[in-house]
Amino acid sequence: MGKVTGFKEFERKDESYTAVEERVGHYKEFTVPLSEAEITTQGSRCMDCGIPFCHSGCPLGNLIPDFNHMVHQGEWQKASWILHSTNNFPEFTGRLCPAPCEKACVLGIINDPISIENIEKNIVERAFQEGWIKPQPPKNRTGKTIAVVGSGPAGLAAAQQLNRAGHTVTVFERDNAIGGLLRYGIPNFKLEKEIIDRRIAILEAEGITFKVNTNVGVNYSIEDLKVFDAIVLCGGATERRGLPTPGADADGVVQAMDFLTQQTKVVWGEKIENQVLATGKDVIVIGGGDTGSDCVGTSNRHGAKSVTNFEIMPKPPVGRSESTPWPFWPLQLKTSSSHKEGCERNWLINTKEFIKDANGKLTALKTVNVEWKMVPGQRPELIEIEGSEKIWPCDLALLALGFTGPEKNLAEQLGLETDFRSNYKANNYQTNVPNIFTAGDMRRGQSLIVWAISEGREAAREVDLFLMGTTNLPTKEGGDLPPL
Ligand SMILES: Cc1cc2nc3c(=O)[nH]c(=O)nc-3n(C[C@H](O)[C@H](O)[C@H](O)COP(=O)(O)OP(=O)(O)OC[C@H]3O[C@@H](n4cnc5c(N)ncnc54)[C@H](O)[C@@H]3O)c2cc1C
Ligand code: SF4
Image (tube, rainbow, N blue to C red; front, side):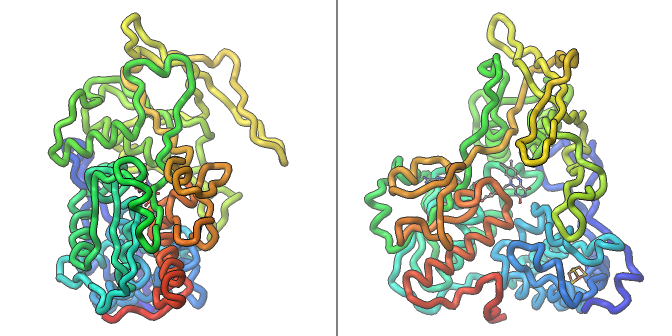
């Protein structure tokens, strides 16, 4: 374990952020790392619990007490080896995961939990710095070919696992760069894109082929896809939810993903004709989740006149609600670094109309306050509060309402079953067509990076088993650690 009395002696310490005025002037990451000594101390707080609930909180089954212990001992290379044995890409989860492991940490019952996510980030960054993360091409090739459709975290994890098992893997991506939502959803100030490229270089050196600008079923035929011995569909859940409200066609009502993607491309050096800019505008972001928060951060970097956020649900409690006690994922108010950069947040509010001028330009939003009527056994009912209508001046309304599910195109062309949410149906990641598998948001609906990596790994194991009749790829329930 860390240090026997570490959890009593030391308080939790987190990374800090650079000042708001400084960071809204650029699109780079803005965390201020802890020193090596501080991180080692954080590792020493871990109690090496007899039943480490952190494990069960983590969808990857990360071996958390083990790497905490190694960090405490200053054994960074061993820590990296343990971390990579369950997680292909800790540099993504170490930056972006909401850390369900920390919410399940036993120390969290009486004190601040172990800073697991930050320890993870420090391990992987140290490993890259020291050159410990090297390509691990397979010793032998099986002669089997695999197509992975979609290069988000699910596709990348599946590809790396299958390549390591000796199969010849090609990843198809319709965008002009690899990474899925890591590339064109999540803004640079949360994940600089060089971090993705650094990992892709390793994957390429291991022997994986990447084909960008290749939209399977559109400019790459299904017939060509069927030539592969197995196919893993990791196309995400990219069907955006709209807001069917009068005036929604106004010039100035924009989907969040268009807004975010354009800015990421501009940071990357692309020229975007008529980029949607928040500069000098009254911006209203509709939707209070991660995507909404990313729009708030981007709008402030553009130099918006004002940024307001609407959420139709009630404001969650600041601490854990009684309905979600430890070790459950807490229903709790989340205030992101973007919210802290300047934003007025409003809950229990519904948009009734987008008001536009004679030229069709958005000028204001009409809203009404709402409440939710909860009757046990019935669906919650939305009730509008009479007389609460309000007009909000607005030049740019960003729709950050999530995604309704995966696109149907591939399912239709490949004859695959989907469920009532249009998620691709699978049994152990295998669809109704035996050599076609699916993982990540495409299978489970809109979710998290950590789940996408976990599903990619698990699906890879099923594919290997299907092709070879046996597999050495690990599951999150356990398996041999790869060689150090
Ligand atoms: C704005 C935003 C912020 C987020 N922030 C966080 C966060 O902070 N933390 C977190 O854990 N999660 C976050 N998420 C969720 C997370 O990004 C997703 O859950 C995760 O990326 C899903 O991974 P995936 O591999 O299943 O799919 P995706 O990342 O969606 O990748 C799917 C890829 O498949 C490609 N594709 C689809 N169809 C085809 C085809 N026919 N041919 C070729 N390519 C195809 C798509 O272009 C896409 O690149 C965020 C999501 C958004 C939108
Ligand atoms: S639950 Fe918390 S204290 Fe216990 S082993 Fe896991 S990280 Fe360490």
